[in-house]
View 1 (cartoon, rainbow, N blue to C red):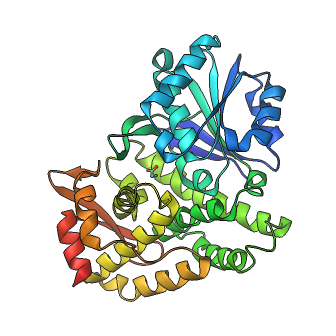
View 2: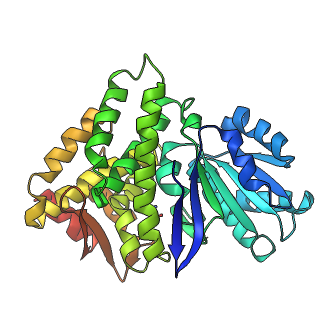
Length: 357
Ligand code: GLY
């Protein structure tokens, strides 16, 4: 995979590297005086050999949505202090988006900020969560309510680690992969992603990721990461264009909250994108005519959920408290075709009423 630079204000603020095997990351870390590794205990068979190769102290964390709390971040800070991490140290997070968000946040506040890098081990984190520097935790039942945006030194993407992912966890990243191409389809990745994901879904219980699948998937991950890197480079603080990356997310966060955590983020994003497409049609955006049905058919073929399991009215309260709500209104990102989105300002109630009509 070619290296992707995230350029902010004319300088490289972060880099995305790709590699065939996890151990290649050691060369990227050779110049850091000390490395501390935080990992999701589910991927211990990958993380511990890496920690050994790096001579890095390692700490496992539970990485469920319910564990994404200030307490876990403080536990990471405690461990850093006890293990002697100083301002020259680098914190390496290995895991999915919950792990990278929490460890990144800990690195941002420990000793007023130490350097950090990510090895995302889920598809969702490889194409979204571990790129762009959003870190943080849930608070008072609301997702990612506390946090900061600060770029990692680098993100190292290695499709090898996806091999052992349980299929539902893999699939949970598919919506974020498709989301990137619904926002910007310059690479033609949307149709390729639908084709590959449909094939993988058809033989989900019989075969793991084959070498040729990995090559195709690697190219799509690269293209999706490039979409995000471009947008983040132009708007790192989410003052404008970066909001596009929230396509489907206002609905998704409300669905996750209403489900009490039973619906995974990636599943909720799939449903949220479809609701956003229905909203675009309800608003009579001409380019969006027929789009929701097309997306629904594609998502279904990929094995993604397409129906909101709750009456839409039950999402309204959670949407009002979304961290993106401003003075009662929310900037909904809606698709107006494959490769193009726009922003519309509505209250949650208005959006729901429009979709219902
Ligand atoms: N997950 C959306 C963003 O990083 O902006």
